[in-house]
Amino acid sequence: MLFSSGQLAGKYKTGYEDYQLFFKLIAEVCHQSCLILNSWEKPREIARLSKEDHPVRCFVLGSLGVAAKEILNSQKLSDEETWETLIDIYQGLQFQLSQPFGRLTAAELAVMVHLANQPEPVAVSQCFNKIPFSSSEIVNAVRSLGNRFLLDAIEEEKITLFSLNPVLKQYVKTL
Image (cartoon, rainbow, N blue to C red):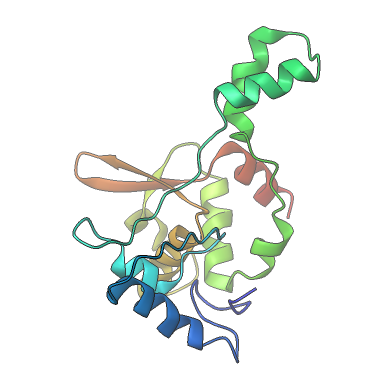
């Protein structure tokens, strides 16, 4: 684990700060190597360097799709009509959420709780009067949650709306 608990996403633990330089060098120095980083959290350097004209790319793992159906079939689960719903709800992942949630800041947790109680996606500005943190803390928390891959972002009429997937909503409501 490279990152500190109780800090915004991408804050390295003491003694792990050299990874910041490592990731920067991997992205900027000419070489024939390839680095694949699998993480719950996007390092700040990667977030800054991930642009179309850079060699750094970020991909979010989605659902298992057809592979999920094969898994359900191999387990001889009946009621095939509900498989699609099951796959959509769980997005093909078995979440182990206690670890990433244990590292959230108070502002991040407040944003998650607020979003978990919203029936529809909301804009960040709609959170300002509902969450007891400053506007800048809320914006930083939303950005950090995005880097932790805990928010779903939807573009609607040039406005970014945020929500939680159904599994996260349910998990947050039980905290």
